[in-house]
Image 1 (cartoon, rainbow, N blue to C red):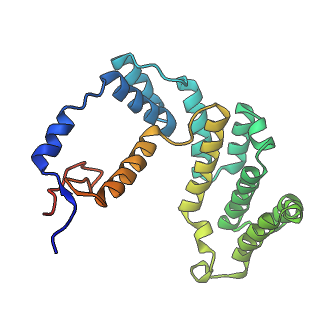
Image 2 (image 1 turned 45 degrees about the horizontal axis):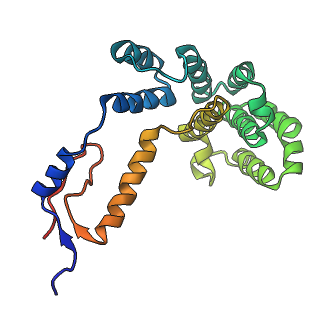
Length: 226
């Protein structure tokens, strides 16, 4: 049975694309937004100098945010908390979930460094009271403390808490909170545009066969299957 979908050839598709005009200023703004959000301070300064594109955040603010990010990624959570409070004390005051996750990360680092007594004392004094007030916090605390039960971490069902990915998860959460406090998007606009592109292609797939993009890293068009 022949397909009822409309077939758009590569030639016609590229002809349509060539008629679309995107201002260089808009592209530069998109690049700048990405650099600022991802925290590439040096690149922001260089790109601003080369293109004259303004950013909505100065380099010093970006460097301060990335200093917090680096501290969490390196496991220096106490230092990260101090840096966040120096930036804006309201960030942690108004976000109990974020503060709990930072304290949880401190506990994980104590376990990682085999400071068991200090870890148990910290859990009892700092995290247990928060667990009494919030069921989800209590469950997270119980998961974290279970690291103590297993001498061989490789057999621990929550061993992922000791993975570097857990640090990155916490660091990303802090980064998003700081950006929000500075009235900036949590994610680069480029991410939203890519999601829109994927959605648009999925919608068009139902109606037509066309040169779609599968590899977004290369952004190459595939010839339509006829």
